[in-house]
Length: 518
Image (cartoon, rainbow, N blue to C red; front, side, top):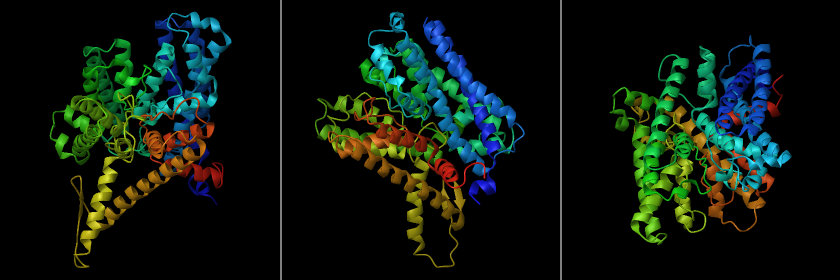
């Protein structure tokens, strides 16, 4: 009997997927306000149909299986993995339907907010794979895009891209739990399956609502800051949302480089940093306990890593003469490293894939692989795992010099763990890190086989690390002209990167060895 046979009940999975689809339809209905405000009335039917499909299916599943049991740990992983994929699939409908609305009625190009460039830009989404790519990139907070001119997109799609990144930064399951308010162990299991563990309050519903209040507060502050330093209001709203969510979608063709403003560049640094710190730390700081900014292991290392990584990258840029002045090297180096390690993916350096040396690209790639704090909006392996592995190796080496009967404790972030507890922590971190690099290698090999010889190995590793780390920085590979095999590989990389691999592998194993019904 398969693992699904001993632990699985497809009714539980179906019920929770239905609730996630209901939440998704709510996001689409809220977004209908955008074409109404911007007079893109032709896009309203596309958004309403996009909302109706997941609403109908989600309501059917949620009602039919409403009496299903609460998910256990196994179900939680299956729901998380399948839920994120299903939400990305249905989240692609606005891209697909808006594109076909324009295709079937070219008169739409006379709309006030559309230009002649919009036809070719939006046309990329007529291909369902491109629409799915954009949706998955958004919800996972990656930011790689199938558009070739984001500024030419209708406001409806500009908003939808930013909105799904904003929601995805906190988590689809966190949103669903906050809206549907289902208390109990089932919500906790789903919360933890979305690569989160620390709670703010004993109640999981109170925890996710607090997370959303913090996120809303920081979003308002981010938008206000960007507007004050000179970014137009519509741009500030979109970039404030995607910057804080460390997603990286932009509404300009050259990302943040479009504005060519040092003030905007430096204003985004604290916004991206906020998204890199765990929500429980934000909660404690907002309550007046500032000591956690330096006492918490992950937060301390976020600031340290940003500082050291920036210094190394700036040094490489200066030594190689990439820019004409040290000030420019500091400005672009600091922004790109923080953007990479925070997994945001905003770009100010136009020659990232061509003018930057392989050493500089690999330094940025290392930041993308590591990521920042667990419990924040970032991707990557996460600092806590890297620190666990480093300290664990030293702990094991030091054990050679102690007597066999010595009692030792492994200290991690204020916790004193026994050797058995330390072994479990070390094993978990090692497994995730191993799988992360394994699939980084698989993605790199796939791209090398599928792409023309125009790209270097550094370019390819950079792009795969960006997709799997949910970053979005590009060396020039990603675009609608990519081979379909490359797009599918990136879809998989983005999916597993957001959920830290294990839930996706659990789902795939269950589907391959028995199915949900056995």
